[in-house]
View: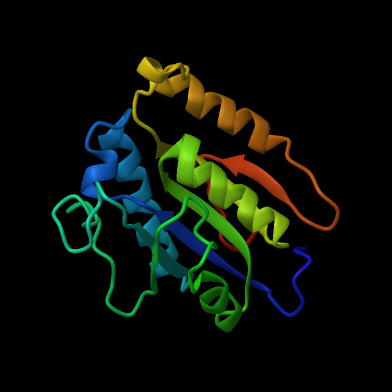
Length: 184
């Protein structure tokens, strides 16, 4: 139902599950396990899995911190989009990848909830995509020292507001990893 023409397909978008991003993340192991299960399910169902990998001063390209966590193994045939901004669409080839694959619906998982997940959710939605956030497959670090709520509250709040997100001609929402239906 996205507003994008001739884009009937769904893709799993795995955002920034990198060593330096999730090392101190809330419920890291459970979230990574849920993402792994989603990747397996998508692959088994013939759904595109697209990996997003962030680079900046703390995540230097090709460094240990920059690498995707060892529990997840991107398939060499799966697209990998490198980014330098929170929104995975900003100054990247993500839109071209999705257009080529005929994708109009995204299922999102990864890190960090209050940064790249939030930015990409909104970025995709305003670009016309239907966007489902996997409620138990995203995480963030503790940013309370800078005035943020505790990570569990950040995650809960993001799940709450994304559950009720609306816009003309687009669908948003949340779903638990075990309940993801890539076919809709």
